[in-house]
Structure formats: C-alpha cells, structure tokens
Length: 290
Image (tube, rainbow, N blue to C red):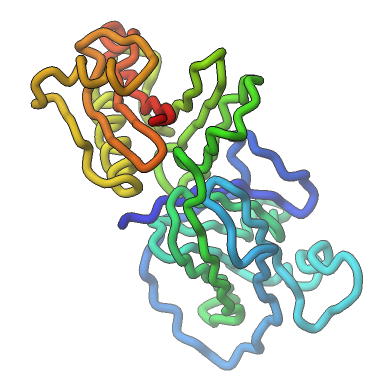
C-alpha cells in the first residue's frame, strides 16, 4: 500500500489552520553521506499529541528540549539551537522531507510545531534528524497508528446534519505533487460526499489532458487501496444502468468511468461536465449503499 501523507505546517509564531497555505519548506529526499564526528548531541526530541488517530484527522507534532521542563519550551528552541545547519522531519514512505530550519539572508526560520494529516490507515514511523556541519547532532523518532474509521474516507453518513460542509483541502505542502479536497452534504434524502484532487505544478488555465490523466491515476490507485478493485469499469456493459440503480445522483452515460462497492458506501469515478472543455475534471462521488 502506497502511503500518501499530507502536511500542514505551523511555525512557532503562527496559529494552526486547515487552509491550503504552503507553510515551511520541503527538500527532496536525497541520500547524502553525513560522517559522524565528535560534535555534542543537541537534546531536541519530537513529541506527538496523539499516538492513535483517524485518517484526515490532525496529529500535532512539537519539538521539545529534553533538558528544559519550564513553560514555552518550544518557543526557546530557536534561540538556544540556532546554530543548527539543518533539521528535517520525515514520515517513512514519503518521497520528501520537511525542512524545519530555513536559512535566510539576515536570519533564519525555525519551525517548532506543525499539524499533520494522513491519507491512509497504517502504522507510520516519523524521523527527526539535525546536522551541524557534517555531524548528526539530533536524532529522534515517533510512531503513529492511523485508523480508517468512516463510511467514506473519514466521513460518517449518520453525522451529516444537512448543513453543507466546506470544501476542505487537506494539503501536503509538497510531500506529493497534489492535495485532496473533500466536500460532503445532505440535501433532503440525498446524502453524498465528493473527493477532488488538485495538482501543484500543472497548468489549469488551458486545455490540459495531462491533468485528466493524472486525476485518473491518482483516484484509481487511492480508492482501490482503500476499498479494493472497482466492481465495474468502462468495459462493463450497461455500467450507466448499474450506476442509476446504486446512486441517487443523475449523470449522463459517458460520465461514469468506474464503480466501487464498499461495506457502507458506493463510490464512482465520474467525469465532470466541464471535462470536454478543459481536458480534465474527474471526481469521486460517494453515497450510502442503504
């Protein structure tokens, strides 16, 4: 199972947010040899506010100084350990690392607390490493167990009130080249949720079939990793008729691409009506199966 994660950073002077703002800085995961010298170790460790959490629910991480037990410890770390040349945090299986120390002209930026969302259930080991020159002076880890409690993703049909939820983006700030957005609502007897994806470096201002290709790849891989292979696809005769039996939503025949059948939900990969004009525009539509 490919683990996909999303990050929402929080510097020591910022309030946490669920927006898609890009905070902090990420560096590519590159294997570089760092010979260890006799440099004194720096007593920074990583602490998570939860060791067990549901996916799409935030886990807060914070840096602690193991030699200090007073108030505002995280606020003091950038002052005490500003001579670190690098400090990175990563989740096992992620293609990139999060750079917690960013050198800038005339100063630096030091992230001491951040929120983190996980896209998939599983056990995740996270690593903190810091260097002064070529010497590894910070080394710590924390393990988080992520469960998959929900009817569709983290959404529970019985908890939808009829007030439209915001289209919430669960950003990853560069650990992948895309972010997921989830919208759920209850309108009369119709209960549904939608999953959309947006790519960071692709151009949405013009006709761009590359976006559509990536949408198909990401959605198919992601939903199949959670709910198994699709029951029906484009090769299935009468897939539109099957969709009409399984879903309340009305769509044209050419919009239905794949259908998954879950324990409490039915899910479909659909083309949006804007697809012909843009060359892209796919989404996952989910409804209760009762």
